[in-house]
Image 1 (cartoon, one colour):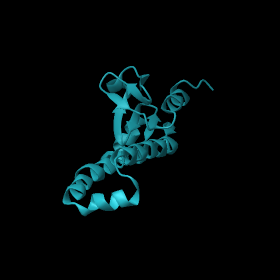
Image 2: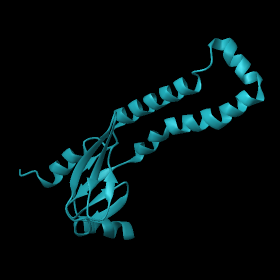
Image 3: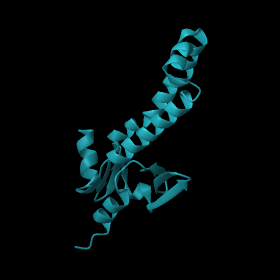
Image 4: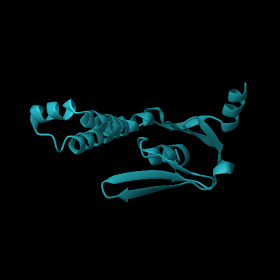
Length: 148
């Protein structure tokens, strides 16, 4: 019942933005390749790999460095559930609902750190990371700036 009241409070759905699956896959591939290059840089062929795993030191290095690095590499998968919905009276981002009165003025900012780009939707209460959402600014413009 609380969910229906909140949906009624937000009004009609105007526009929606979904996860950018291509960007997520590209980031995962780049991260995994980086992990593989760094972790296996000192190993020369299969003989070197076999010798590396014969020692307890090699196995410990594998467990302490390689497995957490792979987990870091696939971390962008959590963004597959990201969503951004624009309603008449508010916004729902990743299931959290905010009214326009709470958010205030919304702006979109792009940050670039070398080869890494991030996009934020800034409001008066919080900066929302919308890096992995496909064209969030376009969805915002369709919802609130469409004069048809």
